[in-house]
Amino acid sequence: MIKKAFWITSIFSLFLTIGTLVYYFHADDLYKKQILQLQPAKKKPSLASQKRSGVQKDLYITQNKERIHLCLQSKISEVFLFQKKKKTELMESLQGIEGFIQDKIETKASNQQFQQLRYFRSNHGTYFFPSHQFQSDEIALGFFYLPGSEMPTSVDLSQAYLRGSAEKISFFLNDKKVPYLEASHFKAEFKR
Image (cartoon, rainbow, N blue to C red):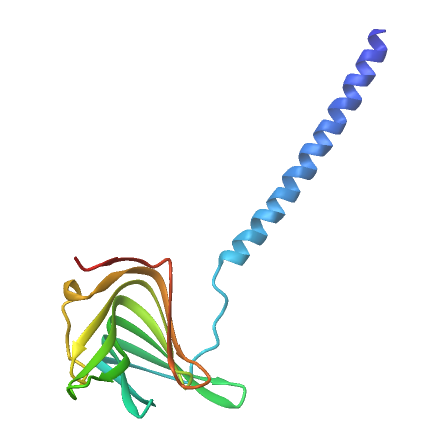
């Protein structure tokens, strides 16, 4: 009886030891794979780069016989030039960003013009050319209805009829060259 119990305990201990070793080595391999996946991939080196300050990008689009203005300003910018297939692309890393997007210009019966304007501000973002795409995180947004058709050089975010924040923002031109702004996790409030 004792001999039988000894052998059962020994076999059980052997299987337990083998199982523990297999689990340990398998878990170690999984851990190494996870570490490799978390490490940043080696980026293709850029052909050229340039640091700039006080950068402004202006894009004008004709929409319903009106000239719509898009403006992106940055305190600090670093531009990288890349070769992608047979095309050259620019990626610009921006810091201290303000953006203005005219949505619409309306002329009232009294011939007075008004503009719908979107404004955003962020600490950092990325601009891509020639696609004119812009992406950023942690954005403050404001929506304005202002007199005139000329884009203002500054706005007071507290005066926006709708203001809020978003975790991420993406801006691009759709197929009809109409500006499209997409904000994720947007939280907003109307002006009282």
